[in-house]
Image (tube, rainbow, N blue to C red; front, top):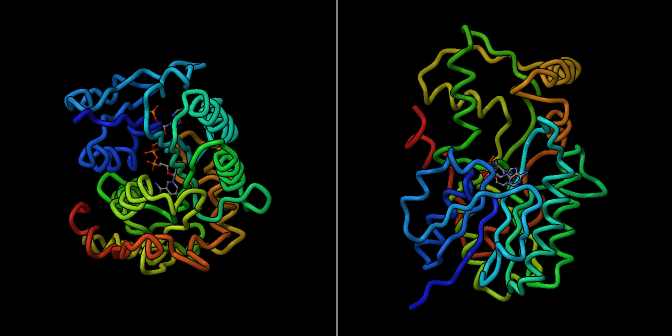
Length: 297
Ligand SMILES: NC(=O)c1ccc[n+]([C@@H]2O[C@H](COP(=O)([O-])OP(=O)(O)OC[C@H]3O[C@@H](n4cnc5c(N)ncnc54)[C@H](OP(=O)(O)O)[C@@H]3O)[C@@H](O)[C@H]2O)c1
């Protein structure tokens, strides 16, 4: 039987690679556009994956021709090198939607973020993600969006980043926003939600908040990581004034561990307030303790 075609924008990233495995297992032939094909040559090894160089001003209608599914995972946590939130989270979504409509793609899955809101987002990141989500849902095709808290799993930039910070810390680690709250959600649960939704018409138009089963403060998550690694580090939580100052100062450096916009995002607890979309989709959320020890340390 001929495989259905899916195009995954952002398929080279952390979530993208996990989603690719699931979509391939579900029988899709996957097209993966990237701006940096040389970094992802390993994907060329799979006969059911087509790595394509994403050009500036790419014609998305041609890219999506014959696709039964388009997934948008493109996103940035920090603005850099002249690439802003607006361009990636809104402008790119407009072009993807226009391309999908022109190519008569029937289905779009869009990755947003928990508490993304064009009007009420607490940071430029959350406002731009909210605006992009609204653009996606304005498309003349069946759209479902996903709004996860922080995502963990093999290859994440969360626990792995903490491990890196703890590795460099000389016994003491000053921590901005120690009381910020998160409900870390496993990447496999997230991609399972996406794949389930792809074929379920009841999910058309839905926007799913996705959370893990437990809520932690940032300090608790750092302490958890330190315990897993067997590192004895004193984590010194900074008060709000010092947290903001640290984020503002460090955020001016390239590759900063925190920016002022990250600080602003963390003022909104990254926890599901009403429904957890995983439960709505029949997925039991996985605890960090089941997974993190398999890849950390
Ligand atoms: N990870 C989390 O904890 C988390 C939490 C909430 C929401 N999200 C959202 O989930 C999505 C995936 O996150 P992730 O952790 O997998 O991110 P990631 O590992 O940083 O991957 C980001 C992907 O976006 C693509 N991309 C970035 N800028 C682009 C641009 N200007 N044009 C085209 N493609 C671009 C990159 O492709 P190339 O570099 O190959 O071109 C890469 O494949 C993002 O939308 C993110 O906002 C993530």
